[in-house]
Image (cartoon, rainbow, N blue to C red; front, side, top):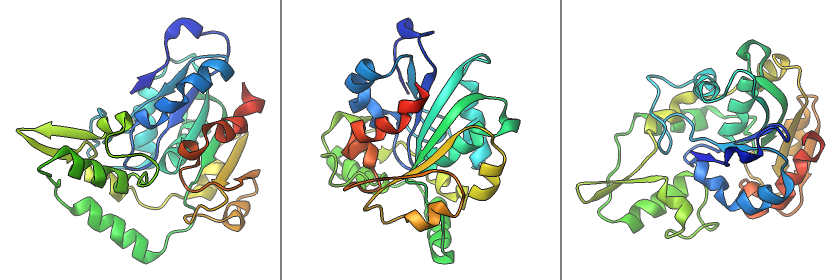
Length: 248
């Protein structure tokens, strides 16, 4: 988990940054200088359950992911959530009225809105696979970058990759619990209906996982980031942070 120092608490809402499937909270580390300049309060970038240093869940659901995150927040914390992909769905679950978390606003980036039966079957197959072991860090790192969708955006030796790997007895594995793939398809309409805070759904212009038309079906504001892909928060942090300007 990445946690901005406590010294700036009280100057604004906490910014809660939630990563996507297969990544870790460290994916937000390159944002630190930008947040130091432009975010008025604390920021938190936790590992979702079964990712990085966060323990796995017995079974995975979006509510279960959100409950784990809520346990790391104080009852009086007021938060603005920026969630990428899986993290965006978890953010919506956290913002639901019944969740009891003081979410002031929610921005979901690159949330996959439509799933085919084949995609769901593939995800279930990945969840059922045993942990894969690799003889070298480089091989494990390359696998981590593929699973997290970061191939081509970060090199295998990038410090952000370290949090997604584990070494045991000379062998390497991903830190992620493969069972997290079994979380399934989100009911975005129900999640949006369960919250009454401002929500923006955003995507990179070239994100192959979701279209503008699909997002506009949900009746909330949609923002398209020109020239960016699925991992827009890695490609252009400043452009994504600008989506939060109204909520500082």
